[in-house]
Length: 186
Ligand code: GRF
Image 1 (cartoon, rainbow, N blue to C red):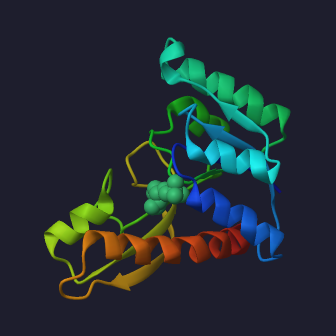
Image 2 (cartoon, rainbow, N blue to C red):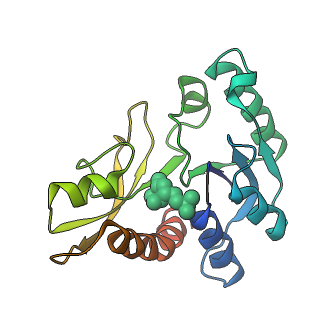
């Protein structure tokens, strides 16, 4: 199966997916990285891994539909079967949702439906919850609202800083996302 990874920033989850393929843990082909932030570090990671990149600046398009059409052309060119969001800081619009029904997956750093949206880790630490986690779910038109595929719980110890919690969450994500994609797609 051919996947396109969509990312906007650092791309540590993109890297974890590439590394899991290399290690024989995940059996898919990363056909394309789609990035909406032309200077993002994830682009360097893709170049190093030999993954083709489509990066674009949304403000150069007249609408979300217009740039999603441009993305879709690339997805068709690369024969993409599934879209895997990994830190893509933008809602998927109706155009792509309709082209990839049930074939768009996201990872979110909380136990949804708790703490959707931006800064989920900061929200959890501020709320003082003792358990948070990671959710992998299908994408629908809402913000982090689609059907849940898998979740992993992570405890927050008394006095743990947001930075420490973030490190634990990312470490879990990097194992959990490739594992879950393998179960789902193979
Ligand atoms: C991850 O925490 C992911 O759950 C969230 O955005 C973050 C992306 O980090 N959706 P990275 O760019 O993969 O390092």
